[in-house]
Image (cartoon, rainbow, N blue to C red; front, side, top):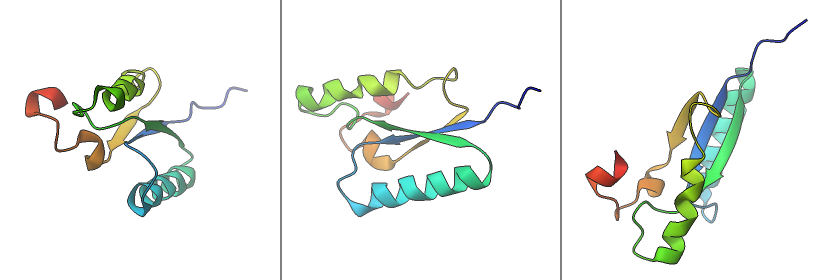
Length: 89
């Protein structure tokens, strides 16, 4: 007997060094479990971060697509004040 596919929710984070992203991650995981969904966490940095060594970590965001998640929650810190409107599209 086949089981129905589990919906997957992605959470894009710029880090886990403060209480806000940790709280959001925990809340998303609890909510996903209650709805029989799974969640994945993707860590990158701010879009268009001024430091190229930080920006290179954003390759992780390229891995998030409809083939691996059904929806995405992006914390505003991921977009960051360094990103332009065109950079977020």
